Amino acid sequence: MNEENKTARPKGTDSEPEKKVEMDMYKKGNRLMISVENLSEFKELLERASRETKELNKTINQLSQFDLSILFSAQSD
Image 1 (cartoon, one colour):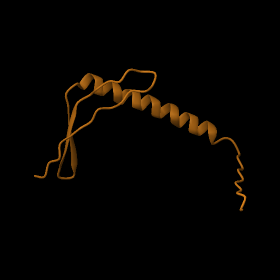
Image 2 (cartoon, rainbow, N blue to C red):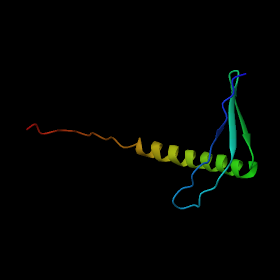
Image 3 (cartoon, rainbow, N blue to C red):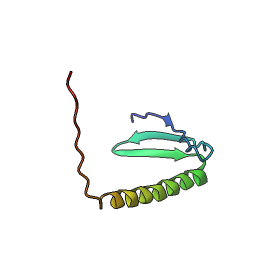
Image 4 (tube, one colour):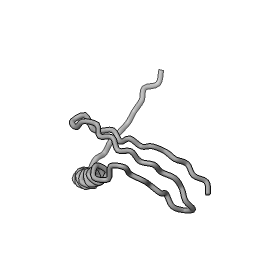
C-alpha cells in the first residue's frame, strides 16, 4: 500500500484566533483516509465551514438578482 502522511493545520480568520487541528491523511485504494486527533475542534471547523458556505451561497444568490452589464476597455499607446 502506497501511503503519504500529511499534517494539516487550518488557519483561523482575522476575527478568530487560530485553532490547530492535527490530521494525518493517506490514500488507501480510491479512498482518502483521515485521522484527526482533536475531533471536537475538527467538528466545529466543519460546522463553521458549512455555515459560511450557506452564507456565501445566499450572498451569491442575492447578487445574481442584479442585471449587470460591465464594459471593459483599454487604451493603446
